[in-house]
Image 1 (cartoon, one colour):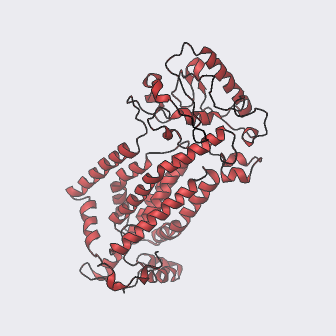
Image 2 (cartoon, rainbow, N blue to C red; image 1 turned 180 degrees about the vertical axis):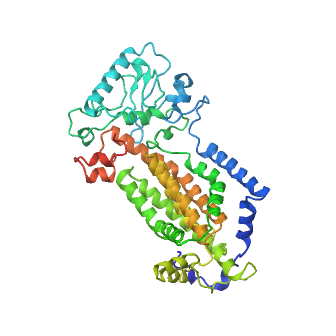
Image 3 (cartoon, rainbow, N blue to C red; image 1 turned 30 degrees about the horizontal axis):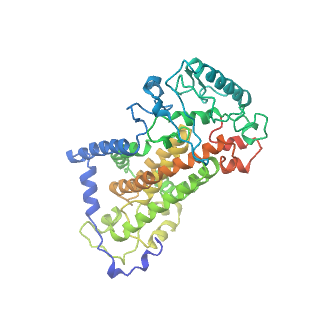
Length: 457
C-alpha cells in the first residue's frame, strides 16, 4: 500500500496540512506554558484510566487484588474467598482447571499430605532449583515460597488434575517425556494457574512469567515527559549523534521487528509471533491510510520552505538530518531513498514510533528478564529522540504513533492470553506439540531444549 500510494491521482487527493501539526505540537508540548503542563497532567490521568479500564487484573468480585508475584506482600489468604477461585472444565485442552476450596482447612489434612507428597516427587525429578525462581505451594504448613500468597489452599484429591513429574495424573515420573528429561519445573505451571485465579476474568491467569502487563498505560502516562526529554536533546548536532540517530531510525526500524519476531518464534508461546505480525501489519495499514486521507508536512518542510509555503504532491521527499549521515559516510543512500518516497507528507502518525512502541509492548509482555524490558523501553526513547533530532517528526506525530500501537495491542491482547492458555494446559497435559516453542521442537531431547523453554528454571 505504501509503495503504491503514488498511483492515486493528485487531483483527488486531500489538501496537505502544513502548519496544523506544528501548531498542535507547540500548544500541547510547550513545557514553558501552562497549557503544556496541563497536557502532561492529562496524559498521566488518561494513562491511569486506560490502566483501570483495560489493564487492571487485580480486581475480584470481593474487591481484593489479584495474587501475583508483584503484589503478594499486599495480599493475604483472608482476602480470597471460595467463589473467587473456582475454575471451569471443558471437553478440550483450553480448559483444564483445578477447583480450590479455601473455606475449610480443618478437613483438608489428607488432601494436603497427598498434594505435598506429589510436590516432593515433583522436586525429586525436577531438581532443587533456585528459590528465587521457583514457586512451591505448601498447603500443609500454610507456607508459600517464592512469591505466591495462596496459603492454606487445599486441592482435593478427586479431580485435582495437575499433572506433576511425580504424580500418576497425566504423566509418568519415569516416562521419556522431553519435559522430564532436563530438569523441568512443573511447579512453575501450578504457579501460573494458581497465581491469577482470584480474578473475575479467569483467562487472566494465563500471563507469561514476568509479564509487565501494565506497561502500555504506563508508557502512555509518561509519554509527555519522555517526548520533551528527547526534544531537549536535539541540540547540539554532532557526527556521533547523527550516526546514532541513523542507526536507530533506519537500521533499528528495519531490524527490531525482525529480531523480535525471531525471538518470539523460538523462545515463546506458539502463536505469539502471529499476533505480533498481525498487530504490526494492522497498525501500519491504519497509519498509511491516515497519511493518504490526512496528509501533514514534517518539520523539515517548514525549515526548507517556511510555515506559510504551500505544499503539493509533486514535491520530492527529503532526508533532512540524514543528509549529514550521507556526508559523514560519503554516500547518497539516504538522500536517494527519501527522494523516491511515494508518501512525502506522511508525518502523522509516525510509523517509526508505532513500530518501536509495539516491539516494546511485546518485549515487556513476554520477557522474564528485566534487562529485556529495559532494552525495549530504551529503544522507544531512542527512536523518539532520533526522529526529532533528524527533523522527520513532531512530538505529536510520535504520540499518535504510540496511540495506534496501544489500540491494536489492547484489541488483541486477549488473543495472547488465549494462546498462553493453550500453551500452559498443553504442558500440563504433556502435549509436546502444542506445549513447546519452536526452539524446543528444533532441539528436542537435547540439552539446548531447556534454553528455549520460557518456563524452565
